[in-house]
Each structure stands twice: as structure tokens, then as C-alpha cells.
Length: 543
Image 1 (cartoon, rainbow, N blue to C red):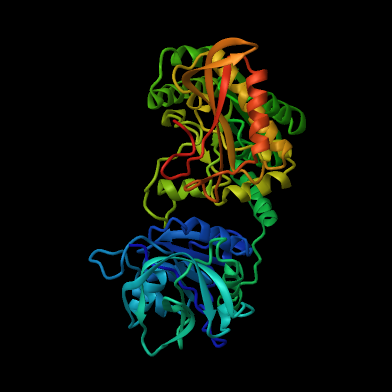
Image 2: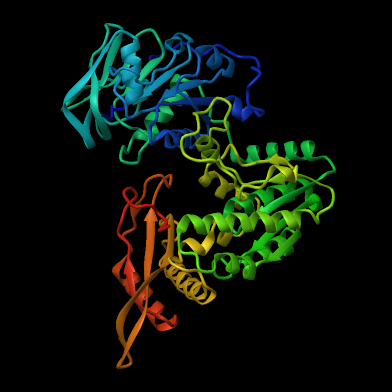
């Protein structure tokens, strides 16, 4: 069962967290020192909470739910947010937090399951709701307390819970209710503890950002001093100190993450940077050319381009199974990269475009959640015997922050706003056997899809769009002649975090233009279909 989220208000006399001079684990910049931590109880929205906090210019990190109160005191955050989660508080083995954190004097906001945990730990009771709440709900604000300052008395919130707090101790004050949830928001009378049964972090709660801002500024005393510009300058200075006079190798993939890493390093160490682009013949149309132009003319980087199309096509010959494709592409990439890296003298460091979600999902953060999703290797899982020291300058940033940073560093919008692209490239969008004629066909069709979406002004609204060449032929009629040609699928999705996604409702006129252009301009395709599957149950990619 999915408990709900509640965001309460904070009294004017809220105790402030103890001033920490400089804990050993404190972030390296003044901006990051004003940080908030999110305890992750398995919520699909944990990363979204952190992003919403950062939108208020407050640095935010995600940590494991069972982090000790002692460790939290060492980290000295300005505030603590308890995320939602899929468990029920009253079940045996349900994840819990250290109850000592409520006594640290640090403001705590419990969202959904987090609210239930807080209320349960402080004398309340949680049970199954008489009526589950999923989706939008009308919320009545009972007190314009700290969190609800400036919030309309009647507002809309997003609920997602089967359990709810049915009783609180006398130490709690109700702040809001819905028709089926009398305790939709609460606060403790003497402790800086707040709870919201709904989700303020989602866009379906229109006033959610204002509520989070109230918690951060009024309850936690945050000034909003964290700025991406300051972060970039701090990272640049740190890179200069760490690298010294040594050389750094950066693998370019054509994607925005590796491009921003290279631009950041170029700004920091100039001609001490060498980049490697493995042109495997699996990139999108003109992608390699755009990268080569940007990192030889604008940034004037020592760029090594490895022409490897034939090699990759040879290793993929006759292979149709998706995982085998990925395995062979990964090995071929490692071989190409390692061979080229060996030719670069004096290289001591290897730079990767690892992002904060990658760090979380791989369990690589010291205080973060354990690995639950994947092992992460940005450049394909390079072997340890390359003996480079790893540099990951973007490991504290989300994708949207990386894009903003790229623009600040002078990268063109065509690179910064390029849609995500899988590591194995077009090979996983070319279903069935991968051959050069099929890749060329797919590349041209894919370019048409992206051109029409960009022409329609939807490039930023659509999170990811691409074409998929199916191993299916269909009968058609062209010029009064019968054809038996390939079928192309078009995929476009909209998402906040790529963990869930909805199919994009592209205008019919745009879809008609895409279909007409593909069939008329790309030989060998006589039918275009549109994928209207969401994630889940489907994935974003087809393989």
C-alpha cells in the first residue's frame, strides 16, 4: 500500500538547527553548506523532491533512510525531508528512520509515508484509510501556519495513499484536511516537525513549490544562496588544483553530459585536455560532425576521432538479440577507447559524465541509498588496468542542471538540448539485424522525426523522441505499384525523471507530416506507426 504525503506548517518560534562550524563531511562551498537532506524510503519521487528543493536555490542531497541521528548531526543540514514510500508503517520490517533525528532541533518535513512515520514516532497512530486517495483532491487549509503562508484556503493537492494518520498526539496541530483525510497536514507544537499527506513535489499540486519554499525559508532559515554559477566556478578551481600539470582524457559520446564535462574541463585546464570520440557508425545524423566542430573550433580541444564503423558492424553481423548487441558494442567500445587512450602520453585522469541520479542508483554516495537499479559506467565500463584516476565533475547535478551549466559554458543549444541517446546508439533502435543499409535508413527517418518536432516548437516539451526500425515488412502501394517494405515506429515521451513517462500527444498534423516525409524521402519504408505506450508498462526504448 502506498501511504500519503503531508506537509505541515512551522511555528514562528521554530527551533533552529544547531550551528555547525564545519563538520568533516560538509560540502566544499558556502552554497552547499546551506543544504537539506532527503531520507529515501523507496519513493519514486525522492529525486523529484531533491530537484524541487534545488529549484529554491538550496543544495539538496538524498541519503539512506536508516542514516543515524549522529551522522545527520555531523552533516548539519538546515532541514530534513522524509520521503514517501510503498510500505505501511505498521507492517513488520517496514523501513524506519532513527527516532533521534526528531530531537536534533533540525526542522523535519514528512511527506506521505514520511508524515506517517513522524506522527507514529511521536505518539500518533497510522491505519488503513476508509477511502483511498489517488489523484487530485480538494484541500482546505485550516491554519495559514508557516508552510501554508500565502496559500489559498482552498487548494488542489495530489494524493497517493492507502494508509493515513488517523490519530495524532496532543502535541500536534492539524493544518489542513481533505474530504476523506482529516489530517492532511500537521505540525508539532514544540518540535520543528511538519507533515503533509499529499505530494507537494509534483506539478499536480499547484501550490506545492510555494509550500516547499515556505518550509525551506521560514522553517529551516535557508536564504537560497546555492547558485549553479558559483558551483561551476568552485568545480573549475577544484579541477585545477587536483589535475595540476597532468593530462585528462574525456570520452565524448555526442550526448550533453560528456559535452558539458569536456567544456568544463576545457575552461579549467585548457590544452591539458584530450577528448576521444569513437565514431562507431551508430550515431544520429550529423552527430559526430557537430561534436567535432564544437570541440575543435570553439573549445580547440585535442580531439581524437576513432573511425570504427566497420569494426562495430562486423561484431554486430548476424546478431538480433538485444542484450547480445549491447554486450558486443560495449566490448568493442572498450577496445577502441583503450587503444586510443594508450597513444595519449602523460594522461593521468579519466573524466566521465556521471550525474547525481547515476550516483544514487549505483549506490556510490557515501550516505546515499544502497544500489537498487544499476551499476554505472559512463564510458562503457572501462577496465581497471587503464589505471586512470576518475574525475566526475557533474556527480552532484541533475540533468536539467547540467543543461543550464552547458549553456553557461557556451555550448550551443543544439548540443545542450539534444535528446538523450542510448549508449549502444541506433543499434538498439534498429530491431533485428544491424546492417549499414538499415542504419542509414533509420538515421534518415530519425532526423525527419526530430526536424518536425523542432519545427513545431516542441523540442523542449518532448523529453525524448526517436524512430525505431522494425523487423517487419508490410504491403503498400506507391505509384500504382505494390511494395513490400519496412515499418517505422515513432516514439515520443514526456517525463520528469525518465523513471516513468507518458507518451507525448503530438499534433495529428505533425504526425501526418512525419509519416508523409518518411515514406516519400526514405527509400524502403512504406508504413509509419506511432507508439502510444507509457512507461510503465513499456520502456522508453524498444530494446
